[in-house]
Length: 316
Ligand code: FAD
Image (cartoon, rainbow, N blue to C red; front, side, top):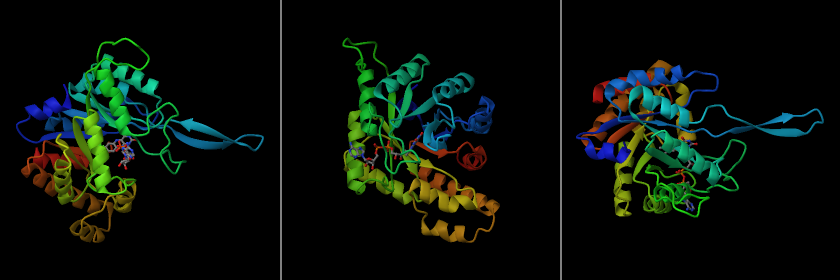
């Protein structure tokens, strides 16, 4: 079933979460171990992130460097199928522009359709670690909006390589939104302009980047509505869980901690202190979001279900 149908049918705020494919060499059981503890909260859908290849340079005997692509995590198609089969919930694969030609994107979507997967979160993806800026595949998409357009065309029966119309797909398309602005955007206004472009192209709902300050989400929703973006906006949150996270999360996700949280984080001496605070903060954030009647709260587990379970037990 489509995410938007789940949202329409819901009588109260839904619970959903995101998992990462396991590192290469781990079994599907490692995914189930992350999902099992959260099933009691009745997620209607589970997102699976996509991680593009990384590049390393190896020195050859002649002294020249050879660029080698390595995949640390498997793709999402098989994992989504396994999740749907085992738990009977909808899986939402993340599909990115980075590393994909349009034809490869089309093939991936055809596979998803065969497997009965109704949803896709369409993203651009970040630059690979060895490049300063995002570089699209030479036959691929530069921005998420183009990927959304391709999926929307397939939903009308317009495939890339064929002159005749084929059986239309029926994907429900989600897109990413940034309450604290995407780090490359000139300002929030241009970011919202492009976000509206994604919705006009066919995105039916938005999932936000993680944030710790609910006011930023509420302001973002208001700004989206003022900009004519009228689709559901699902808040994404993540419990902070270790001393490392304190600097990693703002650096990696380009987000700020509100002062009340940073003051408490300064008092933390151990990972356990941070984890406890992260759970308490996550509970307060979730309570306030739920009271505001948000359609769904989406938790970034990063495949660690312990803290999300502790929060969800108080909320759902
Ligand atoms: P876009 O919408 O293309 O926006 C990127 C930047 O370009 C923004 O600054 C925007 O303002 C600007 N822009 C947009 N359209 C245009 C245009 N037409 N012309 C000029 N500028 C434009 N990454 C992964 O690799 N795998 C994942 O699984 C993944 N999951 C994510 C899930 C969520 C909910 C979120 C919020 C992010 C996720 N990301 C993931 C990270 C995401 O890929 C990066 O944040 C990426 O840098 C931007 O992706 P986007 O889809 O928002 O890009």
